[in-house]
Length: 159
Image 1 (tube, one colour):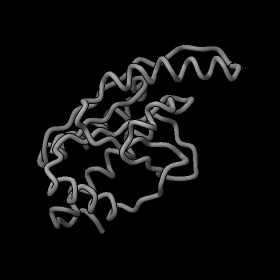
Image 2 (cartoon, helix red, strand yellow):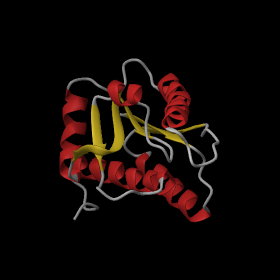
Image 3 (tube, helix red, strand yellow):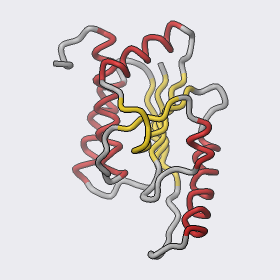
Image 4 (tube, one colour):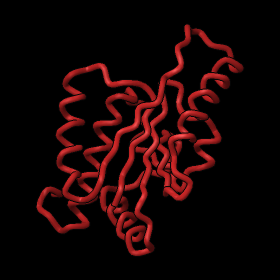
């Protein structure tokens, strides 16, 4: 299975970068993994509603351009569905059986995701009602993707 994470912005903290590299390496056993970083719009706060909309639209265009037409898309949004690790693993199994080999996970920037990206998603997931920095969310997401693969493979990592 090919997994791509499309995320707005760059990783700045070394500890996050090290964690991302570790999980990227681990996932190599299960298929191809790719991290695509999308340019984050710069802005000064406070923003009007119109300015927020414009930032989201520009970032959304870049996100949508990075998604292959046949990919199965998971968008991360605090208003999405709360799944367990086991539910994510079961979805991976269903997609593999149906012949879907391209999975894309999308993480927006500090303002969230453009509604067009949410509309393109096959599933909108919420990892928590808490708000996480989008850079930290990458590490949390990679760990959960890796965990789902180990569940599917029946390996001991998942406890």
